[in-house]
Image 1 (cartoon, one colour):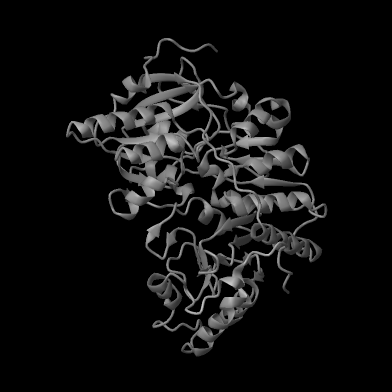
Image 2: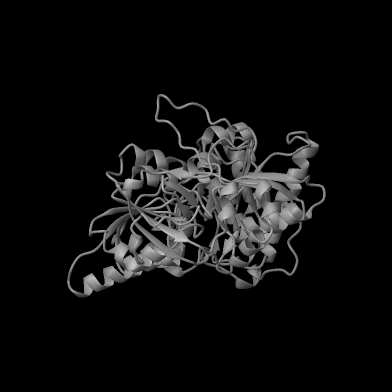
Length: 512
């Protein structure tokens, strides 16, 4: 259907003028995929101009997850964000959150739509949503992410649509959009396998709410991952070896189970590792983010289908998809985040989930969000949604950081995002700890012996041996000694020897 001229057409600058100081604004985007671009940039420029005149301009901002440079980073640099939820990855915004200039609500991504819809965040003034098309009766066809945009469009009092002609209009053929009825009238989500569709390819919105339509043609600002290094390759090998053992023990069926994978270099390396091993059968994914590795694995026939909420892939990979939509459309489904991250669906499908942590302690608690327990990194994102409901939950991290000055395996994490009841497997480049069925002290020794760097093992063993007796042995006078050493001296171990931490050319040998 051709572009509709009955809606108010505006420049991004004119649309930005509609949004007042103090407004609560939702922006589309789940990662940079499908994120609003032109209007946030214009809002950033407007904020700078108003601030230069001594006038206030700050907004409360909600998105599906993190966004791109044109949204979070641009607005943060303009000091235009007073409050933010649920996730971010902007350096400037992170600094503002950690200096209390911006209030941040970190929350599970599956909970965002319901929390907003039920009014816990207050009235939503505006939604700024990227789309490929808008029809006269208010059908909004989204672009490369669904995220929480359906809920934003329903809840917002006023809507601004960015029509982005860069993206293929055939993306709608991947979309499967449903919104959940409110409790107590909510039924089960009728999904039994990743490629099943139960919804619609568009979001319906009252056309009278649409106050501006802005046109542009811009790609998503998705940066490439770093090349696979020896550490991430070794972690991938540990994970693949473990899954093959689980198949041999018949704890994973011969047709395999769907994967969920977090975003990042380690997660990308593990996906490549799974695809490269011929003993792993062709597999499916039910996940939040479809990333670069998925494109190659799908072309090779190793990834046979994927359900996601975003195509978080670099522009060249996205063009590869657009040039062969007949191949990719039957193999990719994009859904709202309250469906991709839905606890009941995750449990029903029996997902193998793979996520990363900043640090893991000897009893299996993981910290994904706070450096030294105080400085917010990005947020918990969807990792908790998947970890708590997985058939098999795997957490991955390099054993050390900063050339060995920091151990990722510690006596007690400084912030708990995922507790010992949810983590089943911990993996570093040193080895893998299968924690299922182990008591507290068995868990501690298993993690230390298999996952800690050798330079830290003696310290960690001494810690548990000298701590007071209890179900979990902890010495509250020493449980953060490594962290205090880091704060005071710049390294966790006083006798730190950098030579012990030189990266080997080949991954270290496997441990039992």
